[in-house]
Image (cartoon, rainbow, N blue to C red; front, side, top):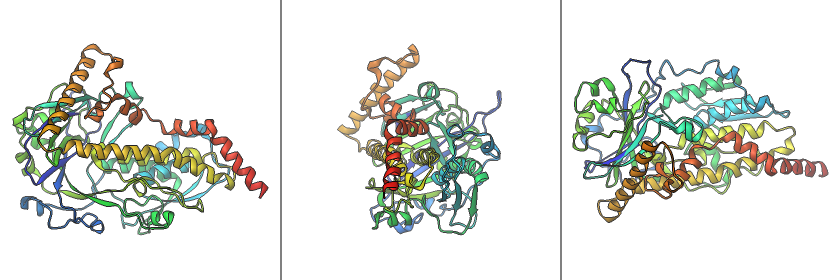
Length: 476
């Protein structure tokens, strides 16, 4: 990731784009460049507006007529049909006591449907819409590869932060993918489909998103998500248009995610779908980024108000018959690019734990284990996302200058790692303003193994707690 600075129009905020699979050797990538554009909004964005905005937002008139909300078709290559049949989870362990689980059709619900189905449970998936389809643009799935991320500050346009991502698999056990949201949704749907019943035009239950109705049932009161005042506008620009412009060509040719930071706004950009993922050291020339040209290519945008919610006190209904996962209990601001990853991890942990269910009396302890494993991790990730919101949007001045200096220090360390091919103990960059350069945070975020976390919980007291629950049930 490269972060740079560029003076941005006061009305605009851009945000994080995305990338996926490599093309065949010798073939130029036909990737599309994805931009997510943030608007510097007011605080009177209604929670009920969903994808609708108050007219008080400072949206340039040139973009207002471009706003559309419609499902996007998955890429033909985004198929996992048949893969579930050949996938073995939990060493083939199936629950002896089988549940009928009702889940929603988002990323977390689909991940849970796949994992719970593989654990032997019956799954019914509910979707409120009349047809399946994701609205969105790019998404990032760690531990789940762009070559690098590059950071740039607000007025100079120089590169201040750079983090290498091409060796994520060597360092943390799995690559870091950029992928179109619709493509990921389709892959998860293909995995879950063989072991689920699917119902359209039905109320979504359990994993039912940021405005969760089920959350109110679990908590016993309303706990609405709060508007942050930020809004995101997302658009996809065909790479052919960029390749035809000498000033923009490098955005496709240099396979890195690039971010521009400015007061109350920032821009992120990279390739999606068939984009190349090899490593690059370079960064884009500061003053040559034709953002006006790119905006001129935009035919339509997707818009979202950014909603936030503090961590909940519990994710489990007292009856142990209703639980929450994904945005229903931990909506993520996009500044850390972890929302989908956290929801998928929820489903993986839940599936692993419930693969051990042999009697109804075990359910309370297993669900408490799920909450104990997931709530602290997702809360910390939410905190990191909020921190990036502050870091990226600092006004020009002493704090911004301190941020840039700290990121430059991290870049020097990163370049040293590239040259020497090793990481020294003193190079962990703890507390770096570029959170992707902080080695301790990277290890915690990207080396996390949901299955191993569930197995460790079982070994280190979970089995005992589940057994104690069964004995108490027998006594009563």
